[in-house]
Length: 283
Image (cartoon, rainbow, N blue to C red):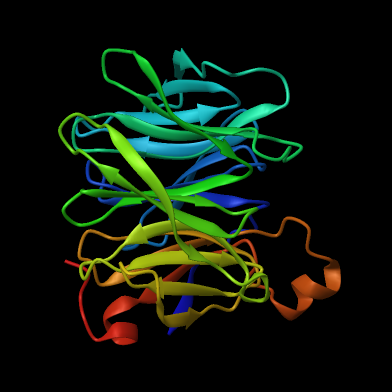
């Protein structure tokens, strides 16, 4: 079902995103301070040294790389040079960006978290191309996986600490959201919902940290199936350009030597043959 695509030993692998400009997979080690570019054809993984913590990587439609370093949004060149372009409205010591994604209009949707996980202290922002910040919502403890339904009428946002994936009504043209409601509450015994992406059928693929699996969740909020993984702490996932393969980042953070010995792939970049698992392509 799954295999090790690249045997990294990431402290906290995160934020996989397919790079259309390079036809490779971008991902970060959030606490290992590296931006990575993985070539699935050659198996080569290029590493760019970055500041820590490194919350996310995103690629614009023009092929520009955008990263979150601490509370700052920066543009990164192919040579690794960085240029700061924005700072979170509520950014201060003890806070950092966590997960983020770009919408088709170039708006960056990004979460800010308190590193001490102070309850209800996190924010969801939207950074528009003109540099304007909008506070979309607040009251998150550990904001994570952000994505939309296939028609973009619904925005999904995860709070890992609370085990909840929320749904909002979303206007894809204006970017306005309203009517937050819980879509699903994940049982703590199943793991903590972390990064997510939405597949071709509109199902949410929520990666279960401490659950060694991905939950495939229907738009109605029911777990339709799970995909088992060989690591206890998977973190996020993204499809390749074909839609056949799903790449999954993972973490070694907080695992003991004995736990790593039992799951040596922890921290690796994994690949799941999604067609084989579900009988369908993503696209």
